[in-house]
Image 1 (cartoon, rainbow, N blue to C red):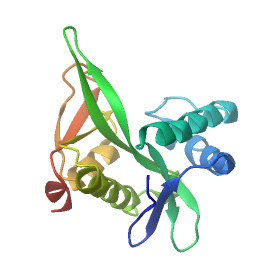
Image 2: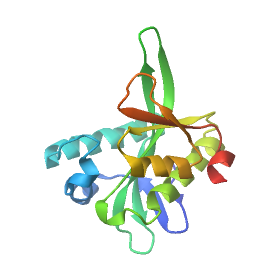
Image 3: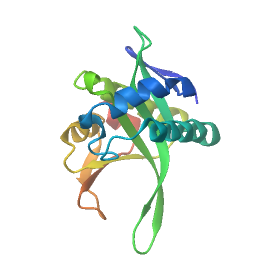
Image 4: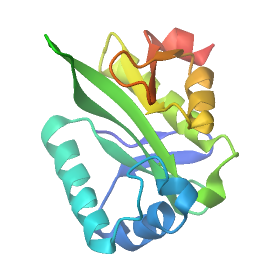
Length: 176
């Protein structure tokens, strides 16, 4: 996957050398891990997550990218696409989902929206995907706001009342 850039951000593949910074950013503040996974992961658990994400990107061509500030090269979070299977009682639907996470110090700066818009541009223009989903806890209002800024239609999750799903069908609706 190519390195993606915006005016302020660089989205690049993770390396194992990112473990200390990503553990600090994602697991050091309860606001960041409150909804996912709901507890503070250990460094070993975060390292397993990082290894999985590195391998996922190499094998599938889509996955989690580190978000860096272009001005300082400081790692502040992640944004990416992943294959998911949404299951119901009678069928399974494969989908592509966008996700984002930032260290607590970087909330409220527009970085999640900026990184996600570039990721959606890549999804629709380069990968030619027909649609992209996002999901979030029904309590995670900040994530709902990002979804709206991405042009997503937000609906209650059909199978899980504790979640909402956002859907965007093309980049033009996301960019407007």
